[in-house]
Image (tube, rainbow, N blue to C red; front, side):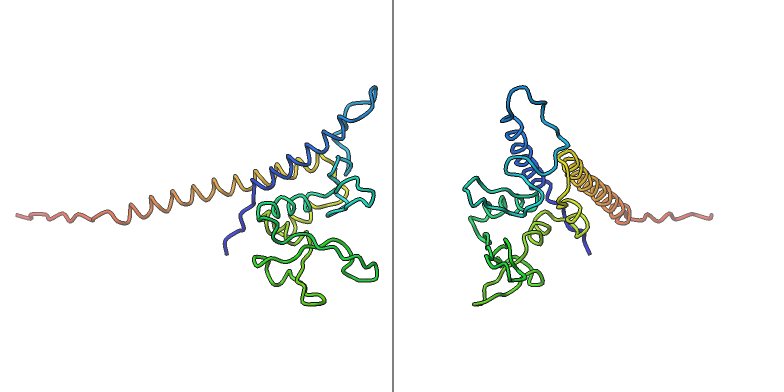
Amino acid sequence: MAEQRINVALLRRVMDVIETEALAEASGRPAGTPPPDWNIKSRGGRWDQRYWRYVSAAGCGTVMCFAGWSVALDIADHDGAGDWYYFDDPWCAWHGCWLNARDDDPEYDVSTGAGGRRFLKITSRAQRILGLTVDQAEDLFLDDISLNTLRAKVSYLCQLQADRDRAQDALDDFQTQSEALTSVTHVSVVYDHA
């Protein structure tokens, strides 16, 4: 089975959004306060690792974690397909923010609710669209993570895919050379024993 390809472009887009949000939050600090602490945890503008997606009742904006931002950018790329679905029932085990299922969401990730509504967890789609394993996704989506640690994790995943690509290129080159050697015509030498 082929390994899933890590979506480096989306990882970098999400990291750019999060860094922009963290910088905007830091630049709005009062005069005389220390420079931004890049070891902050979940306090960067509209980035907060504790929430998949949280919309303030006071209208202060929406904050999201890495998984939430991944999905938000993906929804925008798909013209709004598979958008947000919020259960506003604290007694329901499914309470919270989910996603309306799309046709490309695997059935094993999709739940069906009242009226046949199909939905799934934000982290399920984020893992899939980022091309991550379960362990990689769980590690990246931790809620108690600093901006520096998040950068390091994204950098590692991007490097991992680059290493995989180089290894695949080397294997392809080897196979091409091997096929060329096996297709060489064998020349017979006839000896004259006279």
